[in-house]
Image (cartoon, rainbow, N blue to C red; front, side):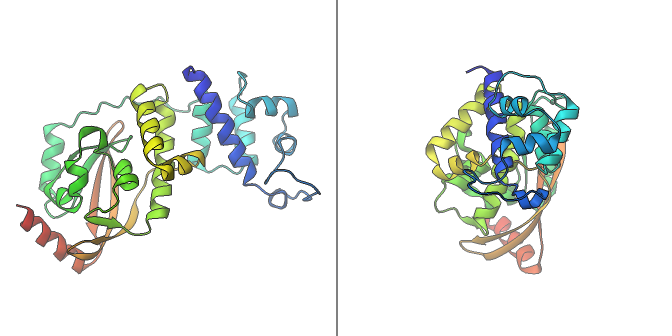
Length: 275
């Protein structure tokens, strides 16, 4: 399958899942009898968006047709797409709104120095594929299995899906993992022609039924600050707010800031013990 064909297949699945979550009542349509699928029918989406039924059907079937930005905007409004989903739709339809940055994957000495100077604040540099490329001692003490993993598995998404008993357990894991997969899908669209990304998705889908199920949902989200709770095997409950800063195109500096005195004290102790 070519890259263009793969994008059309993803576009088809994405439009279908977004259509199925919009009920007729949400757009002031009568429910009607004998609906074979959840959500709106294709002809209803076409009518609400002001496009031809045949044209929209072909678009959702993944046929090689062109869609203007005006038409995509109308479909996005009809399907009530948020900002991340709208950008995703544009990329899948070949109407990217901004240049696709190149993932350099290079951590400079200056980046490592910033990580090291953060002291008790766990921090790492990660690429958009969730590979952890560099970290400081506090991060390594908090997530030792991730940092020590072989290169192909030194990935936060991989470890969350496949590490059954980590030193530091993520609370509210189901919700946080679903969001992480949605953020990853948004990045994947920019790299769908990269064999490394394709191989990563194939391997993780094969190893983790949970990831495969979430991947099939076609959800997409933008990265952003989070509040996360963890249970450490020795230190107990820890709470952090995470801040994600763009270092260079496609590389992010992620900093974990303790949200209470207990977490702050625990990070000081764990960092001293790891020295």
